[in-house]
Length: 171
Image (cartoon, rainbow, N blue to C red; front, side, top):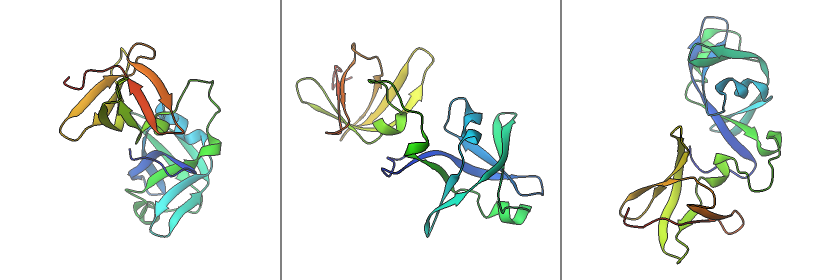
């Protein structure tokens, strides 16, 4: 997932069609994955910019999510949406407690050690079960930095765009 435009957060992607009545399959970035259907409207990335589409229905279906969008009534119309990113406006997100962050807020931030040595930029995050991990792309290598607040992640400064991480640059 790429760094978001300030007004929108990408929460998924239309991955294909479902049936013949205009339903689409959705790859969701939300947790749990069917939370994506709670947001309305969705904004689909098009060549002309973000296009709002109201969500008529949506639900988990096996390991994926399916949704019916307003104005999309047949398989051919649904097929035209395949591959489009799904975003919501940032103001549609729940407010978080102080010190909590959405993953989308961290993507694109610079990561440096407490001594000021640059590790790279957060490319994406992943879940490992034990803790989340920042995937940081440096000039010559990729770092997998555990997202463990106070132990590894010492500070997050969204205004400056910097995460301070107590991490060995050679690891």
